[in-house]
Image (cartoon, rainbow, N blue to C red; front, side, top):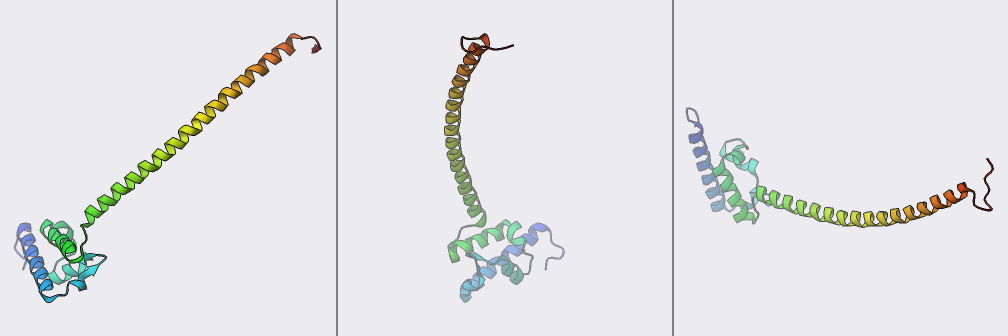
Length: 144
C-alpha cells in the first residue's frame, strides 16, 4: 500500500483513509462509539485506518478532519486552542495575584517606613539624653 511511495503520497493516502472512515462512521451512526472526553479517540481512528497515532498529530489534513469531527460530533474545540485559552486564564490569574501581592507589599512598606521614622526620632532623643548624661548634668554625676 505505502511501499514505494514518498511521504507526500503516503500522507495523501492517510488523508483519504480518514475521510472514508469519517463518512463510514457518520453513515453508520456510530459516532458515539468514538467519544472520549468530548473528542474523537485518536488511537481508535489510527487503528481502524491502519496507521500510527502520530499521524493524527503530524498530518495536518488528518488533524484538521479530526478537529472538525470533535466540533461537529461533540461540540468541543481543538485541544491546542483549549490549552492556549487555559494558559491565558492562568496567566491572567497570576497577574491578578501579583497585583494583589504588590498592593499588600506596598502597604507593608509604608507601615515599615513610618515605624522606621518613629524609631529614628526616638533614637535621636535617646542620643541627646545620653549626651547630656555624659556631659555631667547636675544630678547625673559620672564618676570616672
